[in-house]
Length: 116
Image (cartoon, rainbow, N blue to C red; front, side, top):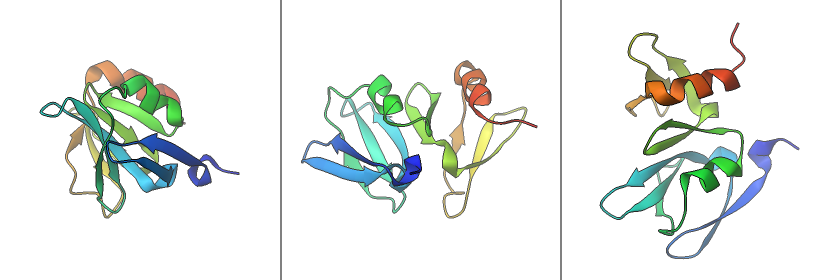
């Protein structure tokens, strides 16, 4: 069974969310609320409990990688990384999202990709 079909239970401020990894586009840290937000592929936004850490989110699946201090992306939706700027293009319909990988995390992401 592929990891994308594997269901994961994530505690939000309102309850327990059961999702497949493929339904999760990314996690972003909301500095105003001091908590991580989960953004689903249908653009639904969920606020996670304040105690949730980046390490816990990355531990859900190897599909998730940190692109910056406040952003964790599902690598399955990554289509292109520009060499000079490290700006990312995601697969449609997510190409409107502006994501740049910080130099600090770029090496770790490259290690996980099968680069030819």
